[in-house]
Length: 145
Image 1 (cartoon, helix red, strand yellow):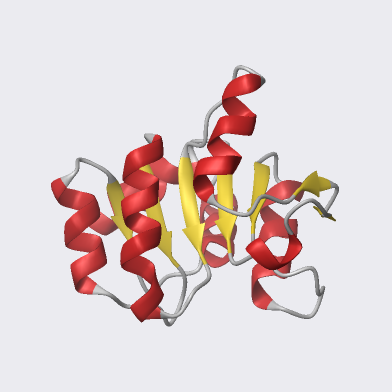
Image 2 (image 1 turned 180 degrees about the vertical axis):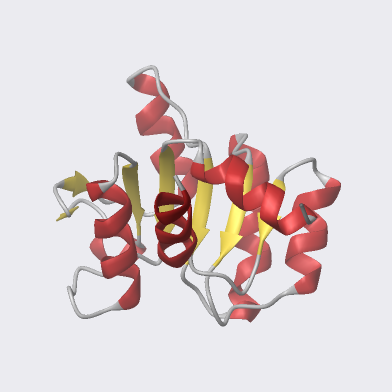
């Protein structure tokens, strides 16, 4: 099993995922993926400063990963991994924040490639995936089981 396949399997086994860049619009890929994960037992934690204080898919939206992590900590929970729907150039600060909150992995969605951000995550001991869709990979796992 490749390193990325191993990271995919491990992250999909963790059930609390922050979705950075989650849109409130149902026609957007971030919304579709988050809803799919939610329907398959994941707790989604929306992160989008434009929608902070609102609810997306029934969950409170946070302005930052730090705010989301603090809210979950106050409930005795934690963010396991971070699913990133941002431009490739915008991913390094998100990865830095994921490291700071103690997330165990980062996932750069399909079409998002930033080798520096991935190297940053791996150097900090996080699992890392890039240019890959969590919905597609979860569907693959479900079909194989």
